[in-house]
Length: 71
Image (cartoon, rainbow, N blue to C red; front, side, top):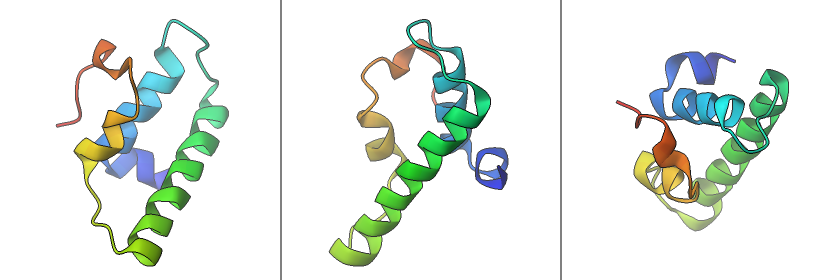
């Protein structure tokens, strides 16, 4: 929950997951999906040496343009 409260990109994704027209998630379901995404991001950072990029994180959401981008 602090990640959603303090990080603009994760907050925007949480809003997208809970307010999308097709298959909206409940708040707890969205938080679990974001935890899974965080684990995959941390794996990429630690194992493969990738840098964290909010833009790259948002690219895998095809319909994300329905909501405003994270500032």
